[in-house]
Image (cartoon, rainbow, N blue to C red; front, side, top):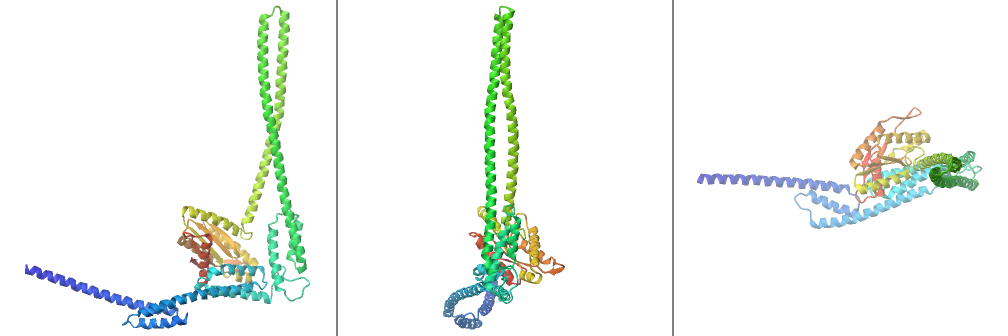
Length: 525
């Protein structure tokens, strides 16, 4: 019995020693973690050093306390540090607002210099997206870089404006009038787009060509009202002509329908009369046969019988003649119905031609004329549809914004024809690598937008990054000269409570993160 107790005592002592060793190991690990946390806090504090003088003072005290591992960090220091951090955070918000205000002021100042329409639209694009992009301090370098690029282009344009649409005023002095030139170019681009939408079926092609040549030539500023009036008259003429053609078509349809109704009404009446004539003939024939039968029985002599038979046969021939006259009227009705069928077939062909024309006009209204991709209006229509499906069924839906890297350099080096060619080839390359259910459209300039139904952010990122890599690996040439074309992409997934605008904002910020990180990459937002 004593031996057993001695063994139990030894077992408990071993357990105690093991527990003591484990406790010591835990304490050593805790001390090591504490030292690691202290070093990490020191390093993190160095990241925000120099942001605020008051905060720097407390950070110095915090680092001194953290480096002294023998002492704990005083509570009053942590309390004061928390208050200082909160104050600095408010100052940071004010700093962000100041940065946003100054960037907006600089970009707005550039826009007011009377620049060309293309550069002015890029500044509008920059200003529209600036509030969302300025929320992240990491995007400041990219924002400043883009603004510096726009400013450099604006200065180049102001120093030596390149000739173009309405760039020089006929008879004016050699000194450029920047505000007028920018306004004239922008108006010229608007008028060109309006003329592109005019259907030459409704206006004389020579009138349209004459106005195009007048717009593309150098004109005096005083000639602008006359050009605008001519454009207005031409557009009004096209609209009135199209409206007149459509009104005539409706009148023709109404007349055809009225005639069809008349023919059908006559057919009904004719069929009623035919049925009545047939019934009258049958009744007359039956009555005459019955009468003839009775007369044959009652006849007294042959002469009387002949006379009675002759009378009944005459009546039968008269009824038969009436019936045949009714049938001849049916022959006219058959001809009318045949003509009616031909007219209905013609109306069907006209209706089909009108449907095809309306379909063509809708395609032109919803597609970009250069790349033949859906345009911004088509995107707005599609994203509403996909958002409704996402809200109803809860299936994943992702959105991506794509932008060609350094596209301006392509235009400056090779010309705008090369830039247009790149846009065409690139849009086709992206589209053929997407699924049939996906949507890609040209959002504006060198920017594209993609919708990927039934696809989460991770899956969309993987698929689009593969497309980006394929584009970067593809060799482009223009007139036998190599072109380097790469893309930046920002991807975002629809989340609970999202609107298309919110998702687009996240994808757009991710796009700028990709640009800030060195371009030719895909980022998640």
